[in-house]
Image (cartoon, rainbow, N blue to C red; front, side, top):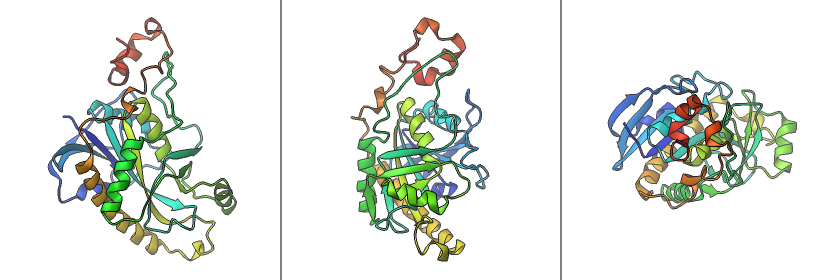
Length: 286
């Protein structure tokens, strides 16, 4: 039960007609249960693992997600690259609904979400100045353009706590800071992917302008749902294209992010912690 590429998004992403050899796998982790079962399948000759971020029926809020379990599960499946797809609001006029942004930075507005595998007797500090894998992001951007999407490489994703949307004052402040899009989920995924030495990139799918926009109040639920559906169809096409384009071997530094990050002396790490984190630290700590 292994996969090379992980995909995080809504359950609709599983409905690609190209998928073959599907199987569901449930994984238990030291951090609890992931959002649901992983769907393993073959896509364009590669084994992929899908996870519905919010669970079946979208029952988990962004603050309730067990990000550590979700990412740990991908690691135990052997995943080396993750492409995330998520809905965002636009903070810039030039990113209208149905555009795709592939951010290269994050700004954290969450409130104490668990976002590290470390602690409890082991300390590690990974580099996170460039939180997105540039190699993977470039492949995602090229794939989006090849599928005919209006795609933008680079930009900052504001990760807010939610589940409420921003106030107008907050939205205008983020714009004054030069932020590009706003969402509720991707920062913790990116942090944990880096600790797990997994490449990570995001398809930020614009559904509407955030509330700073003068036309925001005229946007209906029906319009947003229609945009969500159209974005989901485009995301399916882009993800299939990415999977087909990626080389087998990675040439980035994501696969060695922990090489100099673990600070705790090996003999000071509790045996149970070593066992629990073996999929992540096993090549460095025995």
